[in-house]
Every structure is written in C-alpha cells, then in structure tokens.
Image (cartoon, rainbow, N blue to C red):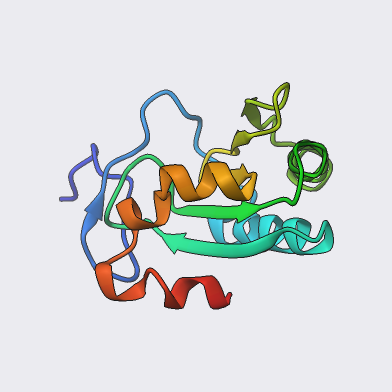
Amino acid sequence: MEDASLSHTDPVTGLPVAPRSGRPAQTEFSSDAVRDAVMASVEDDKAEDIVLIDLRGRSDVADYMVICSGRSSRQVAAIAEKLAERLKQAFGINAKMEGKETGDWVLIDSGDVIVHVFRPEVREFYQLEKMWLPAGQVGAARTL
C-alpha cells in the first residue's frame, strides 16, 4: 500500500515527492506545460540570459525555476505582467507577484514554476543561479 502523504514520484530522480502544503492539486495541466508557457512568454518579451532550473526531487517549493533579465525596470515589470496575464489566460493560474512596483527584481509564483525577472545589476548581485545550479552548470545554463 502506498503512503498517502506522498503525491508522486519524481520522474528524473525516482524519489518520492510530498504534496505541496497549502496548494491545490492541479490536474488539468502539468508543470511541464506551465514551464513551456513561461519559457515562451519570457522569450517572446525579449528577456535575456534565460536560465531554466529543474527542481524536481530537490525542492518541494516548485518543479521548475526560471531566472531571466530585462534591460530596464520598465521591461522587467512588463515581462512579469505579461507572463501573469498569459498564465491566467492559458491555465487560469492567478500567479502571485512581488516587486513589480520597483522593477528591480520581480518574483512570479505560478505554483509549480517560480520565475525571477531581474535587472542585470540586481541579478549579478544576488546570483541565484549559484544557489540552485550544480557548480559545473552555472556558466553553461545561460545558453538556454
């Protein structure tokens, strides 16, 4: 008999993954579909240095993290706003957003995909890629 506290097994690592507390189960779409929509949205809006980080089996916060940059505060805010609109339209996701007012670093939480949109200087200061990517992949990840 399976443990009811585990929601699924990670397809990459084979490790059991617990359900995300406080988040409803999303059965009508997959995290991969949301990931693909996020990537298409940030690419369409000319985000730069897009990095996709697979968190499955490593964190129960989300399945994927996307980090990208905009050239100005205005572009950062626009990328975030359009992404939230597209996720709402395509999936009915009411993404939570923080930081849009200043446009230095906007966090968009869509549930299974977390997106960070930075101005380049702010991104360099915080260096989130170094926290989440294995050491050998930090430079290579920017080629996405």
